[in-house]
Every structure is written in C-alpha cells, then in structure tokens.
Length: 250
Image 1 (cartoon, rainbow, N blue to C red):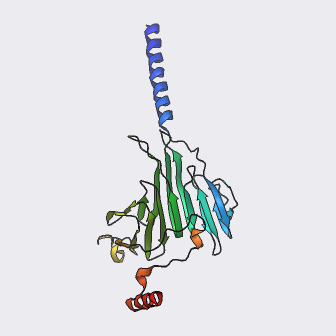
Image 2: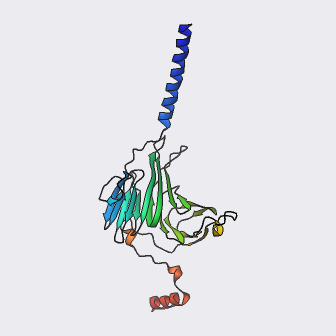
C-alpha cells in the first residue's frame, strides 16, 4: 500500500517537473542588446528604476520599460541587435514597452511614440515557416507593424499623425480599420479628440480617419535624418510649380 502511494507521488512529481520545464522553455527572455548609439544635445532617459529621467549618454543600454526623451536641441538614436535603428527628432519621447526574445530566438519589440517624430530603419528577420522578428510601433490609438525591411517616419501631434514610407512597406491599424502604406506613400491620420462623442457614453466612440497619398520626399540619409528639413513638392500651388519650371528651363 505504502509502495503504491509512493509510486503515485513520484509520478505526480514527474508530471509537475515536466510541466515546469515546458513553461520555462516557452517563457520569453529579456536578454536583448539594445543601446543608445547616438546622443546629441539634451537627451534624457528613464530606465524604469524609479528614479525618473536622468541624463542619457552614448552606449547606455536600453531595457524593457525604458523611456527616452529629447529636448528642443536633442537628437537620439537607439540601435537594435541587427543594426536596425530608431531615431528621435527634437522634442520627442518614446517608451520601450516590450523588448524580449521569443521561443525561437525571434526579437519582439513594442515601442510607444508618446510625442514628436521618429525615423525607423528596420530589418526584421524572417524565419521561414516559423515566426520571425516582430516590431510594433504604437502612437495614439494606432499601431504600425513592420513585416519586412522598411525605412519610415512617424510624426505625432495632438490633432494628427503622419506615416511616411521611404523604402519597403508597413501595415497600420486604427480604430477605423487596417490599411497598408506602400513605398513612397504616406498616410495622414486625423485623430479623434474624444473617446466618446461629446462625452456621452450612449453615443458611439469617434473613429480616427486617414488619407493615403503619394510621398514626394526623397529617402533621407541613414545618419542625421532627424535634422533633415521636410520638403513636400505636392504642397506647392500650381503657379509656384509653373514658375519653378520656367526657372529650370531658362
């Protein structure tokens, strides 16, 4: 009788040990190598240690939960393991919500653009039939998913957000639905001011609206792109374009 009970207990412990090993093997790892690869001007970082924002410096590790903020004269670049980079223009802030490794070693990154402008030059690695690297950029109610190597910019203010793709493509998800932004195209998203229409919970929530247009900007250089001025030919009136053509042909 005692032997039978002992056998059952050993079997139960074996099952529990196996379950623990399975859970441990499937758990995400936080062993990421992400760093501040460029710091210019006023740049501050909160490393989620409870100390708030401190002065940032070159090669400082960026871990999950970190927040990076640039001042009016500040620019920063965050580099990932594969050489992908996220660049902050002046007066911008991003939160690194999720930085982890998946079961198959894929890199899982979720970044929240709180304010300002970021340029992203990403090279997510695909893994055949398995899930590859995943990069998600959130802003306001929206999110951007990058399925392949892509170079793009996101600008965010109180009223609208603009996503411009220089190379590659990306998928955007908004309360109004999902859409793709192709290479050399941009999407301007008009943000809803209130979650509920006129503050009345009985009325349906407002939805953001978006317009996709041809992007006439050139692909900015890899370094210093945060300081490059934005020139969109499409915004020039017809008379100005005609005058410009006369000057070129003269």
